[in-house]
Length: 59
Length: 403
Image 1 (cartoon, chains in turn yellow, orange):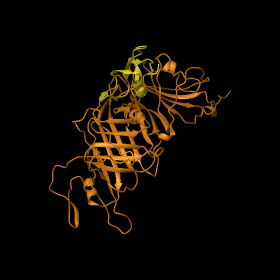
Image 2 (cartoon, each protein chain N blue to C red):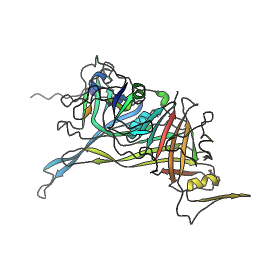
Image 3 (cartoon, chains in turn orange, brown):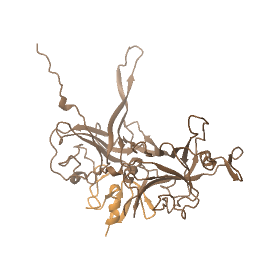
Image 4 (cartoon, rainbow over the protein chains, first blue to last red):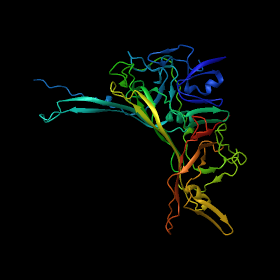
């Protein structure tokens, strides 16, 4: 099952570069490789001046 | 008459190391402080995914206002003052040569990982990531009380410089600049420095990334790769046994010989700070340029190597001679260089810094002397390769990891 993550640090996945602020749909095992650079957006959404809420790939 | 008590409290003199953290969910405006878990790390239940930036050698907070005097010719001294700008930053010397941390230090590099490798490519990204950053240091009197310096919205501005050398560990300085988060209340838009007066307790601790095997030290080798990594390969393919360029993938690779001192890979963006008159701090950041280079001091005066150090020479060899001649060629041909070093903690694995398209920029100079060898310094400065994907147009640093 995939989840949607917002990119907080540029990453390269499957030959494509996802820049800061973009979203990417990932399987859990792949998201864990990039955990330092992702925040899940489909759990609690955005809050407080555009900063983002909790959502670790492992949650 | 009674005197006034002095306020001398040695317990409030702070001394001790700190940890740097990227804070996933910054503290809200009404309570602009972190919730710390029982071990003094950010409470992940409150602050989400926080990232520890690893072992550091020092950590420095600074805030510097620029005050303008308002003067009149009729008065000896300024009659008032006004704040022009406020600059705040956190600086640290990082000790872990690990790709997620280099990626964070660079900001505009793209991190990638796969089976057996981690990498950071650079060149072509212009959006600078911003994040909340905290330095947390326990007090010397009570390990569960802390001094905290918090930048609500920060950006990496210094890039990194990694050295492959025997003489010293590869520590690299990083700095993070505070932006003015104008969505926050005036007076606390950039930073908060505070002490906690009660012990931290409860909460959900966040694991630190304190991996001393990631501190790098040891010599490297400099290579010219006539057959560079392609836009899809990205990385230098190494022979697993010798940790040298694979002869099939990178045919004709040239080793630049013995070096004196370290090989230095520098990737440094110039970050433009966007300022508006309505805010005292910068409100956005943008990349002006990235400078990337590989530098070393070469000690073999073989002219096959000298030609790459010079860049504009014309190399020739024949029966009884080899030469580099110069003068009359206007358009030098860029080439690819790579620095390759075995990992200190695992000599079966390597760290590689590769610039896809470079020109030597400092020329060559050597001295013929009885007292010292005729070494010469080289600096290969990266060009942008516009034929490559944005984000990987200049180069890559990658490390081999356990599969």
